Image: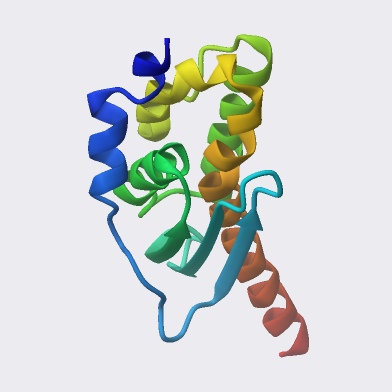
Length: 151
């Protein structure tokens, strides 16, 4: 069963993390930490004129599961809206906690993490990247709203 959890696909995703680092001038930053294991994801974003992710960078210190989820986010997040990211995060939570099928659309590769459902202690680390990404995008949108209100 543990072999299903650390499949070749998950290990490949974890080893090939895209968009590593930090942006020098992010519009929004998000950070999440899994309290149980200490997995951490810090995400910086800038948005395009439509409010979709234009630039993305991530600093992830996590187990292979958290890194694999961050790998999928990094591969597919550019061009995504806050709603798409929230739907993917919500679908991941459902997949891990209540037998849901997992994300669809641009983030459907997160379904590779479905075996994590059998390991509740690993759920939080698997979610840090999606949660930090959503937090970063929401922070960028809120900053734009504040700027527009001040003008």
